[in-house]
Amino acid sequence: MEQFLITPAAGKRLIAKALVKHPAVNESLASGTIVIIAGTTNGYVAEEILSSIGQAENFSRKRFFRGIVLPPGSSVTSSGRIKDETGFPGDVVIKDGIWKQGETIFDVVDDLKEGDVILKGVNALNLPKGQAGIYIGDPHGGTAAASIQAVVGRRVRLILPAGLEKRVYADLNELARKVNAPGSHGSRLLPVAGEIVTEIEAISLLTGASAEQVAGGGVSGAEGAIWLAVDGNDEQIESTKKLLNSIIREPNFEF
Image 1 (cartoon, rainbow, N blue to C red):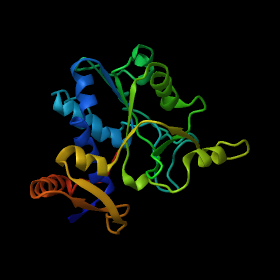
Image 2: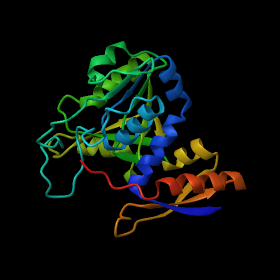
Image 3: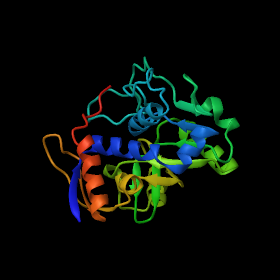
Image 4: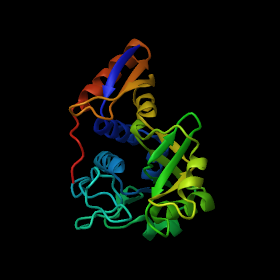
């Protein structure tokens, strides 16, 4: 067993690299539709997936988000969006291996079917309970509401890429009951059922090794970082070392 430090930015890149190898993603890329809903983690995912099919030239993750969490005092709207959304590219919709530039989940949701894939970031994880939750700023439920109708109505696969920095410890259904109650203020919370992919699942997908978080935190650029203990055979450990060394200095997100 060896231990590795992963910053939030490196974690996003790690998760993105893993999703390129995900069997369901590859099946949808070959024949079907995959929707990568705009978000900061999904910006890395879109970059990696588009690169894997040779179509990343016109993509930038700098404005690939709707709502965004910024430090206290930053200027965002009441729904969590920046005031100047110039340059927002839409979601990444790939149909039969071709990126349909400018399209969003709202353009294609009615046509999605079983076998298609939606990739949607989340804001809260309770991993022991296998729960994920999405912060909602839009009064109509935004992209989360659009996604759920396809997932529940037509069995479209929902994959939830999210870093371990988003872990919480309370039951998300109970938290949602509190923050969604009349008289409460701030964003709402929507618990969703889907396949959660964190740095832990990413390492398993990419190397076959198993990982677990053993510590977290840091300063001077390591704020929010996690320590993972990785267990596997010599080949798997060496593969993990090479993988994490390739992303260890991933720069922090900028827009």
